[in-house]
Length: 299
Image: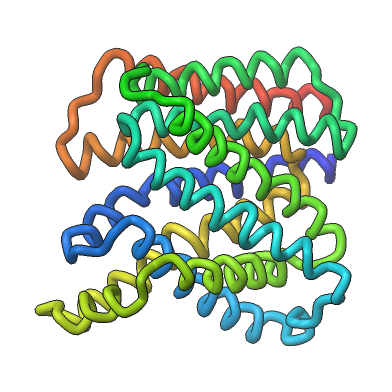
């Protein structure tokens, strides 16, 4: 019974993470209005998130800053290979193809997580998971809008790269959590991601945009809020959720993100909710429900 309770809490944390990630469009659009490019917004987000994660770790567990030298490649993989890689691939894909197509390719991540989980963790690929995976992916396609326009072999590779990088966080994060707390894992992940982002974000241009802003105080607050809402809270919640939820299951539950993004677009930006998007939302919710019904049967 205790295990079922932990699984339920873990699932709720991952749903929470998906909801916060789904709000990213609000912050990205606001920062873009100041002239920041996509990669610069990524750098702002991960850099401030690294600072906030470090502060949390300092308060919660100072000893958590100690990591073994042999685990350095693991955190490099989380920072560079997952967070930075998938974000850069995703934003690059957005510039090469319709947004809906880029979103569909990003949300191939549950497929990659499931395959990697079977390979590395020997997780069982049961009928329930496969059914939920199909429903979730179909739902993401409907929510994003089915579009194959403008897709080139390079664009396809970049788009699939975003899905693989996104999925890699669940795999490497699960391994890291066997040795470290969620606070240590997220802190070092974002420290390395931030370090890598400064190589490609054109820092001088970014600082010029800050200095030219008419309201630098508000802009600074907006940047901090972006890091807190779209990175610190969701990644900490997701990483904590991975302690009790299988990586493959977590990847499917997290597909609630595009559903939330669609609802926010409708409520905040007055974007219409089409029949296709509404159907996709129902499919994603069905996938999450199917996965969590299993807990009740086992309890």
